[in-house]
Image (tube, rainbow, N blue to C red; front, side, top):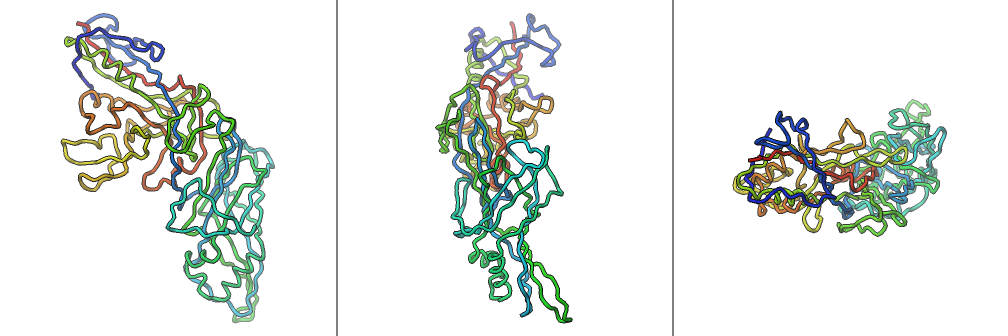
Length: 478
């Protein structure tokens, strides 16, 4: 184990803020076969209850999201949550040449059920979605976020999906629905005219603009659909060179541009009044909340750890050895049926403005080491890039503790050992020294629109007193 030894100054051990941490002694948890109460080395651990607040991040990009999702549901803690998908239709790489006798038959949309989020499905339950042609274009150069919406054009059809109890991930759940024939006829006429409309996605969607999948008012869950199985199929027939009447199909897949809208109306909930501008917010209850998609994160203050260590570094005859440190979030209050927790969490050190991701200078100069806990993005020295500060990897990743499925646990041992060993100084690592971390579901700096924290509505709540930092340490008793 990488142990940290730091000389202490003259002052007895001071127990700070007794309501915020508990002092116990258990050498078996540390692995030292020594007497915990007398001898040359005392073994201890302390549990700090961390003060916490909420932060709702500025809306993040959902442009080119890999998610197709729509629906709405109500949660007493997170309000009315709704999702809408806006997407181009994708044309084929080559355009078929239709015979002059070709005639339109019908048009349909096929979508494959992937997963649900909201209330638990019951047998023969029907959830409904409306499909619209867009009334305005999706502009490829625009960075759309989860709060953006577009004007709807003509309605194209309704999707009534029958669910069964305990539906989760179903590879065989492909649903096909008829769409408006006037829309289908217009697509067919352009295909038959071979006038260049079908040359590529951009040309095609500048005319037809794309489609929207919108939750019906009777909806009580958000459903995700498989993007690989999505298809709009145009059916027609023509007489071939042999004089046979042949049925044909032209398939539209997803186009290369799209985004989705995800929102929650928080009025009347403990989070009512939170602002999506990275401002600290304290809920009206003793619980703390986290939600993917709407970008609500947990902000934790671990400065009590610094206060404690400062209080014991007083006797020059003593040394403190930091053995282990763990951050835990739990026990998580039970969610409504059908709602899963994020599969893991990521920690980001925060600046005073709760900026995410943090902007900082990165260098490979050995005298300016900043990358120990941070994503290594810089291909060369001394440049400023978006950094996910304090991203925990390997043994320090914040993951769901599989021995307790309603608790998240992260090792912070190496970080705290290095911090107090002087590996980080306040000039090179200003964020870490503040003693504040923002926790959020996994996010990608390069493709945030396709990560769970920007797509799903997973959420949970925990009691504020169940967010803790536990420190295992040894101290000399000379």
